[in-house]
Amino acid sequence: MRKLLLITLLFSGVAAWSGDSADVIGNWEGESKCTVAGSPCHDEHVVYHIETDKQNAGKLTIGADKIVNGKEEFMGNISCVYHAEESLLSCTIPDFKQENLWEFHISGESMTGTLVLGPDKKLYRRVSLRRVREKKS
Image 1 (tube, rainbow, N blue to C red):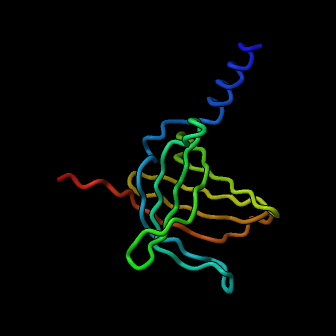
Image 2: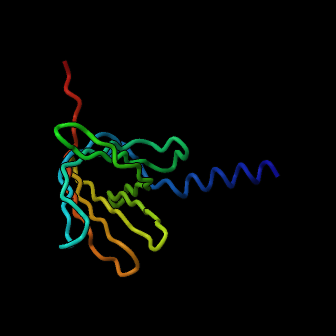
């Protein structure tokens, strides 16, 4: 029974993991623009901190901040899966009424993304980010 549980856990971790996360782990900064006029959405300057999920090594977590008065303000965490063969980071955000999907395409030091809402897949946000490299002293 223990072997079966261990094999199941290992297999589920491998199945969730789709590639080398080095392409995406790190800090990304840019613009998040609304696409639905009259919605409660606001355009934002954002910083995303992407790291390995502490609860599930097969996933990544985006810690999303927006910049308000020159300072980072935490908005929340998003759980994601990286698909290296497609350079795609996909993040499903369930809410009480619908499923929302973030998709980010990585190309070198740039990342572009969209947020689509609900079963009709309404485009709600477009994001354009650049990798932020640590400055060496």
